[in-house]
Amino acid sequence: MISVIIQLIDELLRFEYIMDKLTGIGKTDRGRMAAIIRSTKGTASVDEVAGILNVSATDASKMLSRWSKKGWMSRIRRGLYVSVPLESITADIPLEDPWLIADRLFSPCYIGGWSAAEYFDLTEQIFSTIMVMTTQKPRDRRPDIKGTAFMLRTVSEKAMFGLKPVWRGQVKLSVSDPTRTILDMLVDPYFGGGIRSVKNMLVNYLRSEKKNLEQLIEYGVQLENGAVFKRLGFLLEKLAPGEAKIIEQCRLKLTAGNTKLDPKLTNDKLITRWRLWVPENWKRMASVD
Image (cartoon, rainbow, N blue to C red; front, side):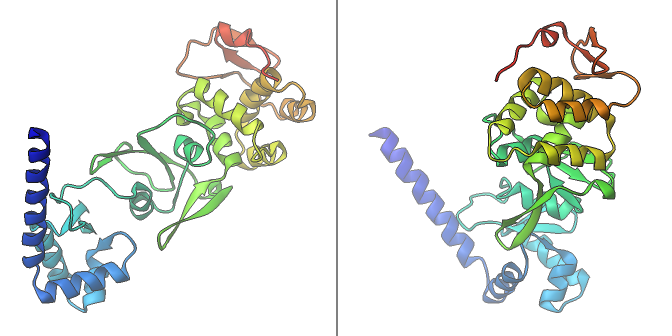
């Protein structure tokens, strides 16, 4: 009974807060905010607001700042805001769609690594950090925005291929397609959560309709990263020995020098066939075919 009363009080307080919030928005401000929400795509910058409302950048900045202080808008970073749902009891809200924020802040970019793997059901693991591949060179590569953690990796413009368009509301974003997702994690296993996780994602990829090993080889050649073929060839030989043609293509594309299967692990056994240092237990890993 006490819990029911507490819940009713909480709902009453929430209702009163919303009513106060509604009555606190004047007709002019309501019209301005409605115009901004209609004309923007998830986020609103000072320049966008100035253009939409036909006011100076200074006036737009002051409006956004005032709305933020009153809890009607939430500041993402300097000059960039998102609207706050009326039912929210605080302006310090979590990001409704972190992918939208990533696209706005780090474009040109794409969602990749473990975030893309989750999207394409290549893993059942839940990763709280959003993996973003960007052509920018940010100082902070692990920003935390409104409680959402991002991991940023810089890629070259020529590496912006193998991407799939995804619509989030009115915004078209880019996410690495399943094959490119696997490729990126073979380039650096860390972006798949480590080689053990990458191995499981590769197994899921091999068993799915998304499998396209010929395309994976093509992507690897286009990216010009020799470590990909060492890791891929070794893993396929262990996980899918029946893919003899693709395994041989990997061997033909080996580059000089030795690579570690996962730089984060103790790699104490050299597989000369693949010019790859691996942990002892990986050397003995059996096929899953």
